[in-house]
Image (spheres, rainbow, N blue to C red):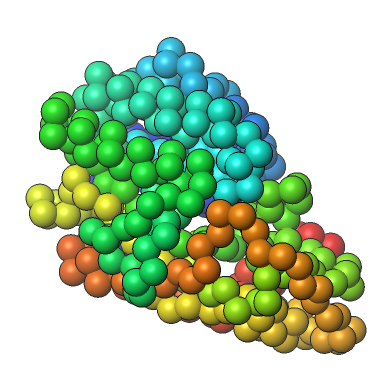
Amino acid sequence: MKEEMNSKILITGGAGFIGSNLCEYFLSQGHEVTCLDNFATGHKHNLAKCVGNSKFTLIEGDIRNLEDCEKAVMGKDFVFHQAALGSVPRSIKDPVTTNDVNVSGFLNMLTASRDARVRRFIYAASSSTYGDSEGLPKVEDVIGKPLSPYAITKYVNELYAEIFSKTYGLETIGLRYFNVFGRKQDPNGAYAAVIPKFVMQLMQLESPKINGDGNYSRDFTYIDNVIQMNALAMQTTNSAAVNTVYNTAFGDRTTLNDLMHYLKESLSKYNPEIANVVPEYGPNRAGDIPHSLASIAKAKELLGYDPQFSLQQGLQEAVAWYWENLK
């Protein structure tokens, strides 16, 4: 991927899982990168490879504070807005804070970006926006009603981005992430994502708990596919490709039972005892979408997206990283 060199980039939530991977990638491409993070869910150790790079700047601040946003976005060409409070269960438990961060914080960043005249605002949208829409694969212009406060906030982000594009001329691109996984994803805490959580439990020979009967399915998306999408969203010069949203996925779905099989298979190479671990099953989680599968035709056509990592290919990479870093 060829990108315009020496762009000035802001990555909000840059100490998080996806954000820190984006920081490393864009630094490796020669860009100047600023990270804005309040470390509510991100970690300074995620930025170990960035700190010390003369082209990297870390600002500790909160997107809920407009002044922090204005300071961070000053002089930037591109904004990659990754900062958010993720997790459907967290939003059900605390909808107010989720809304403050994901909606008010998003609006602050849009406003600051507009005022600073950034060239393009690329933001993390979510597959949760599809809500109760049962059609598969998920196509960008067909959504249902949201099933959680989190889903509402991510849909509102898309509406605000569209209004800022139409009203103020700010170029925006939303990337609806589908179950992203990979290096640096935090396995700890009540709202940890399923893959790192399962990996850590299997490594400790504990029985992972699967919500439901294990037949819910997801379009698991490896981090390097997500990095590719963000880079393409930044570099595109196609006017038809901006001011819209894209599914960011691999375009295949896997049940939780199959995921468990793949994880045990991959981890057993490191410790054969893992093959004998049996998962436990519990009730379905409130707000969960039963099945998720993305159409990536739009991204292929307008951005030239070509994901390189299937779930199993990504798991090989991710499991090796987890084994090295979570032991």
